[in-house]
Image (cartoon, rainbow, N blue to C red; front, side, top):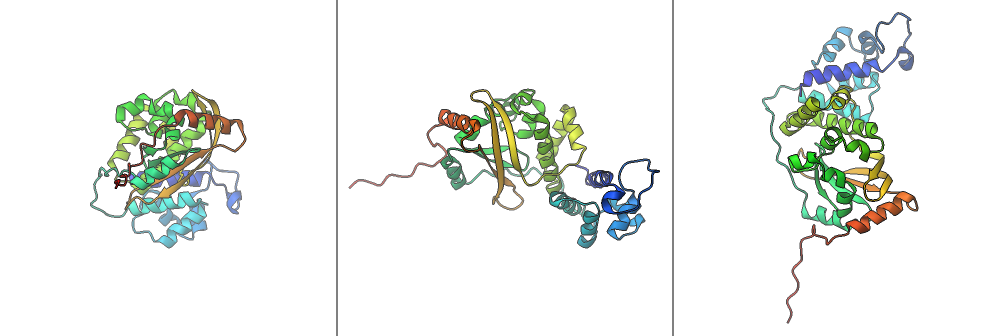
Length: 299
């Protein structure tokens, strides 16, 4: 990823969504483009127009945290967008780091035991590139179309972004495909700011940008999502339509490694709850994720 271009496009897009009325500045009818002008953002941030112009062109290395906070406040960035801006500033610092291929870290055995102990919610662990690295049986059954997708067979691991944008069947599986696509890209954007030197992530973004016009469109919007929670509708081939609530939490996995534990469940007493329970019964298998404990010797 081009950090300077990302900074420029991100700040420009955030400036374009604001209006003078929204931020309490006087407005004039003669505006050639939507949004605030650079000089108006500079006024709100308490910096010179020349200085802010340089910042918006990508010259962010060495900028103090206080100034970045002021710019974030002027542009009314939310918490995730602020984190992304600071990640971009860190990535822009002079460094000799080259793109690296980060070693995949598998989940620890106790985490797999935890996943397998959850029987009425689909539970899985994903990394920052949206690869699925561990599941319980219900999560595997719930996302069977993705695990059975050619995009998974080609790479040996299920990946939400590849399935979403490179498998047409995903448009049938997700009841609100566009919303899910936006969240997927926003999660990858956040990871690209956090880990700009990740070669696998660069290759993934390059692959999706080359093969999917929808991905290119959404990637250019520079939307950011770090916290992952909400509702999702699925059309499951075995049990029909499901309306599920999902929540993700961070798992400690070592330095510079992002693992999220995601849980999908249904509101108790609803049709989706009944269908999810049915799918859980269909997916019930021996708990192969738990290492077999040695039996005590008989006297």
